[in-house]
Length: 371
Image (cartoon, rainbow, N blue to C red; front, side, top):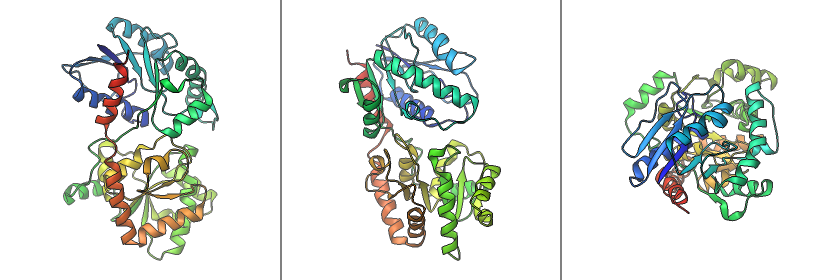
């Protein structure tokens, strides 16, 4: 069978969750399946992170925008490649797919709410809201990444339970404990990181809960004479300055480190260096960083909401993400109680073993081959 996979944005330098999902799934299939032939459709960009092989051909498809790439140029490329079935990996698909297909819905938050953003983000929101109900009706199967998200999809879209499949995300094997101190010290110097730090990986999206993280951290600073510093990735100095000004806590700016752009390949080392990892999001359909941090031996604080308890199991410190006092208490306990920190670290390492892209690829391949 010739199987096509849409992976429009995996070649862009700054990858997001859906891009990582597509890339890691494809790499796992490339290793796993030498019986079937794969054609991967990508948009040309600067990070050429996947190459053709004996069982896989990478086809570059040009397009001016996400929409014309997906609705016009991708269907033409699919026809030319002669694939038997397609997997659309990023929530949307052509309205008129030339072959039978499956589609991955990572989440459907865009069907319920809109928090604003750039013109590009606004257009993307309404595009997904228009496209998704139509393409899921035509799909042979719809994949999603957690039981939580399956319930949300079932409540919102007219999809039979028999064609809605949960196949969990995973993490790359590069996320692991690193014993080489020289390797870690090079990263510490590269990004001017403090010796001990709390890591927060989040952007300006409201669901990432940055403001409550800053409020909780400021309370933690007040309660500790020698507080562990906070390292924030994916936020600028100006953005953090504005948030601190709004909560009237500019005094803690010197306790916060902002390394700027981080190469994704350096992220496992940064997890390894961190005392703990903060991930108190308001909503996630999965939360890959939770298991990435666990695999690196970094204790995790995450939320009691949406899919995060499902992913973390009993291997993280769970908090109400809206409760600043609760989050402050968690930070205090994991920075000051070495025994608790170690216990959660060990549970996290064990929990991470439950997830692998090989297993995700195996489950996905089985659906491809279903008649």
